[in-house]
Length: 156
Image (cartoon, rainbow, N blue to C red):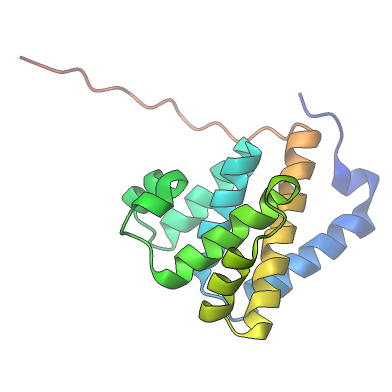
């Protein structure tokens, strides 16, 4: 059960987050990359609400099921571009900051793929999804439940 509604409790704060989200969405970063970053951070943070939302958004924008399924193992998959790999490494470093301390290797990889402005925008994107994850997990947002999926049974 949801603990509280942050929009009701602090509408100005949520409006500021929505403004940041709007900025990032229109910052010039590729929409597909934005959704990969949001999904990867949400996986790390265990945010079902955000995963539900952003996997749907990614699919609507043409993202493949295969890339979404393999996202936790992106390092072992050839399905992601060098730019996406750099963004995912930076996402993991900043999402797991207490453990990673944002290593120079991840920064240099990101620096090779992103301009200074893009790197700031990517970092803001990562920060924003981490805030959304903390709101959703901390206040126990429940993702919408659609009709149950009927399982296929094997026939001999």
